[in-house]
Image 1 (cartoon, one colour):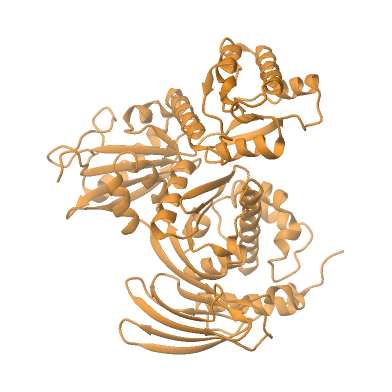
Image 2 (image 1 turned 120 degrees about the vertical axis):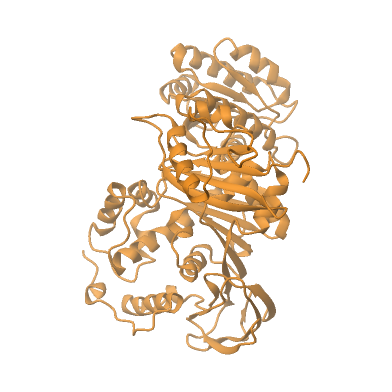
Length: 585
């Protein structure tokens, strides 16, 4: 083993609700995840120190592994001692705390402001408002907007390098005037990432008022250049966390600072895209926040909603998505006020589980509609307009999906939300390893490669989805499957149906698939595949547009039949009478 190689690495992620820790060690020359656990995050009253929550987790891991990580004063022991006490490296990520109120300033909304939104996407920042030449406000109105939005951070971009200067200078003067009107202790930091010929002028104008950070022009020359500005932002946010009471001890112990969880996850999304040469989508739907990261050829795009979740933020999510968008995924007409009541109950009891099948259907409908809402968010800010049907690998995180335990059902919900076309592999990040690996990349890159290709993520299964047009009930796919233990099965799947082929983890299955005329799988009528098994097996989806047709009774029959098919339910499908009640006026 090389002297610089770390034998043991601790990774911690501090979320709004929970603190999770993972322990990685070298075992027979390769890094493996040997332990993980979680405890409530101790940010805010009464402790306001996330180290308290981490200590609780480490005591739990210590009991499980018969190891000690903290000294008598509660500090992390580094490096690892000869008797196995302590760890060699510690990395930390966080999504805890309220997002910074951020003001975006630029020349044009669809160019400069859109570029700024893309630059801040991997960070927990809330773009509260915008100031630009197309906002319909005069200088006085813009001044009032800047002052009254109480920003904690201002991001200024605009113009091409060595381009027009006078208009951007006028905006800089306006920002200077607004900041001077704010109390000294509450002035925002400013990131300037516009026309490079004005960078020093921007610094000289604003440095007497507040902290000023400079970054290369986000718009660059042609393609957007986001990474330099994001690196500056990351350093600023890391320093801000390190100086806060809650994170002081963590910042002092961490080997690579404190990374935003989303930025670390974004790093791993790009890694999997490069490694697999596929389009990759990472989906993290939690109780309070939601995140999507899309990578194509290693280039990654991220969207974060701090008001979109299925627990603490459920009521706000329903408000944003709209009841109509949720109801389209229900096998019944919701009663008046039912969806609002459900979401309010989730806000008050975010850890609660659905009490019956009706509540379960509402949760699944809210998840489907929420993912589609987030995909639209990502598309709006993406100049290349991604085609979600071309996703080849989906990484799911967050307790809503990754912790459901229903692998095939998770894939069915993803099929509805993404409307994918072809073969999609699904992996689950049930232990929060994506954030840990993203942060670990700066400390031990070899560990990232070994853990990403090893058991850090669970292989859920594969989704094979047909597309095209054919009559309901006609044979859509002819499937022949042979497992590595020699067992064979043949199946004809009808249009409008789904079928789950069990394929346990650690096994492989050889598939021959033929689609009927008019249908295809990723543009092909015949496929030969060899796929690994997983918790969800292989899910074949030939529903096509079955959801778009039929009465509510027919929709209920179909949706419950699909649910039974993916969960292994063998009892006859029975529809509760109240599901078929006419919608209330």
